[in-house]
Image 1: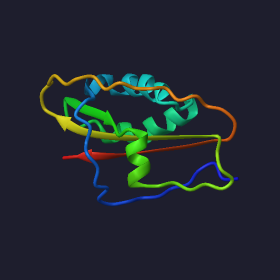
Image 2: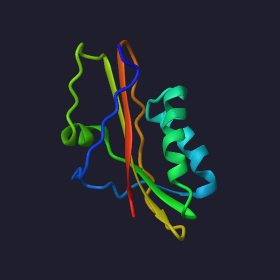
Image 3: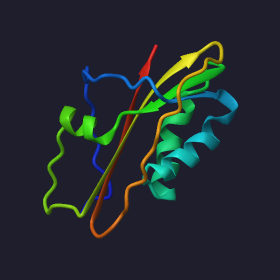
Length: 128
């Protein structure tokens, strides 16, 4: 059993959600802590996500943050795991740095139920 699997990809062609959240640079860490748990990650997974992404989110005053729905991401990057997991949680953050705050419709987040053998995957894409 492996606790981690790393992969990189280029040019995923997905429809970027228009709903999301505009978060000030100073509130990104708190925001991610809250939303990642709602997206199904446990604290250790959320902490590792934040450790990776937070340093990349320091240049702009605000960030538009959205999460690609898992069903959409499953179509773009199918995942096959053996043995078959009881629960698969895939968190893919899409974000863009902003100079100014802007209003956006809040994204609805559905919290998955973790049970049995759980596979989690997290990643993201930055737009410049």
